[in-house]
Structures are given as C-alpha cells and as structure tokens.
Image (cartoon, rainbow, N blue to C red; front, side):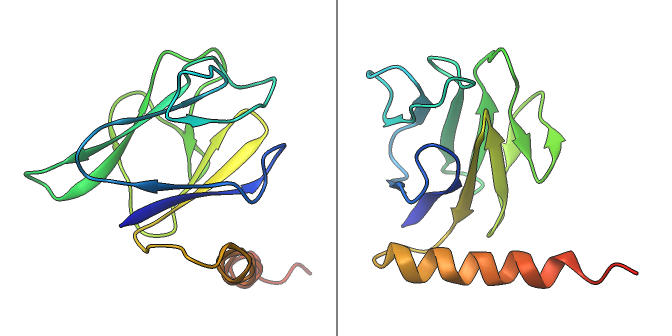
Length: 123
C-alpha cells in the first residue's frame, strides 16, 4: 500500500496510507481525508487518486491558490506519481512512496539521506 509522508513543514512526520479504492483529498479543511494545518495550503488543495487501469496514483491540483508542485514543477493536470516523488503544497513537502510505511522515523531518515545524495557537490 502506498503512503504519503510529510517530510517538512508544520505537519512534519505525519503519514497517510493510500488505498486504491477511493481518492484522497489533502488540505486544511477538517473534511479532507488528509488534513494538513499549513496557512499556505487551501482548504481543498490536492487530490491523490488511483487509476485501476494504469495501476498507479496521480496527483491533481484542486484549483488551489498557491499551486501543486511535483519535483519542483507546477502541475496543471493529472500528474502520474513515481516512487520517491516530492509533492510541495504550501510550506509542506510530501514524499510519495509505493511502500507501506510502518516505521516513520526510519522512512524519514531513508528519504533525507536520499535527498542528501542527490544534492551533489558545489565548487
């Protein structure tokens, strides 16, 4: 089962398991499936949905004021999610993983090390 992990922002460390049956709404509203209290996030900011035919998750901007960014690029339509993709909404960075996360500390440590490796060296 895939999981969303908040890597940074006001709700750092919060996780949400993604089931393939129903879309997940992410936002400030308490009616959202995955509520994130971040002043720069719209009440209903992002939707994560599973496409049964393609067997993958998609990120969809729900007409948010500040946009949805996947790996630094603003999305305008449905955006296919791959293992390790970083979704930024407001001040929050959310990591998408296809794994079922049982140990949040271990998962965050793993992804933070992965991010360090990607940065490279500056001269």
